[in-house]
Image 1: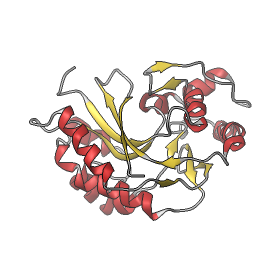
Image 2: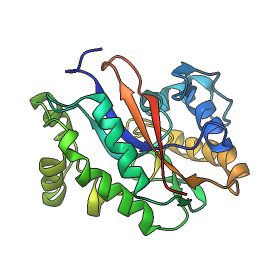
Image 3: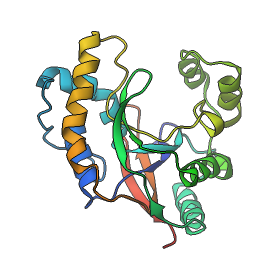
Length: 236
């Protein structure tokens, strides 16, 4: 495992035994907790080929909501120290119920989002961004170039320069991505994806989900998917 190419991310992810995780893994065709592909479910009106294609980007990262975006460790940082710091950080925060999740079409992709804002989620995400940032190596020139391909305003550019990611702090929105960008697909594809996601996830919309842990995901190289390596329990 190369320290130069390995990346880590802090995510929220449902527990493995929770129906949300099981269904999310089946939707993506990948279980990040085991690091293995699983049989992707059927999601009409999408056909299998289209469904596989539009979920490829989300599948690469595994089922999650971002709290601190993927980063490489600083030169003197170690995985063990990162995990210890995440455990200590998590112990300072109390678990709480996640508001009911619903399917939504965001700017260019389909995602699960809370039915209402919850300041506790944003506080944890903000704290992950700022308090654990000393583990993050600066973006490489190539990484910065990729980020600058997005249309970013002055606020987002400042956040990118400060924290290595533009969608943080005042620009943060908790969501679990179900597809990648749909901009290059026909409009009907986005409509079908929205219908498919609602058909899959609405039946479990009332299943309780606790924000009870911070999850550390690791990507060993750019050619590999992210996988869950650690759950740091929040205080009960």
